[in-house]
Length: 138
Image (cartoon, rainbow, N blue to C red; front, side, top):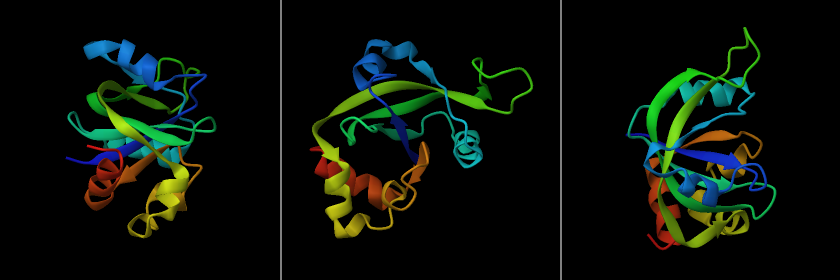
């Protein structure tokens, strides 16, 4: 099982909205970067990810799970190569993990959130997953 990080601006799609989507989840759209698209194509059902509020808050607030693997983005223009995956909320963090906290943690200096800050969908290593979950109170 792989781990990922999904960035969303809370005014566009928030953790609360993801939770409200319930067990049926919702598709994760709006990805318009080829590296992020390739990450989404690599995702498998059951993979887990961090839900990160970008721009506003700049913090990891919960865990989501892939419930449907990559398929064509229904919001893309015809002929565009973009994909989506379906995600459902799994659990909130007891304590949000801020970007500042991630940057200050020496064990996370190589995390994509630090090194590839603009990438909207990123891989997370098993070691990073464990550390961030601990920081978040899980």
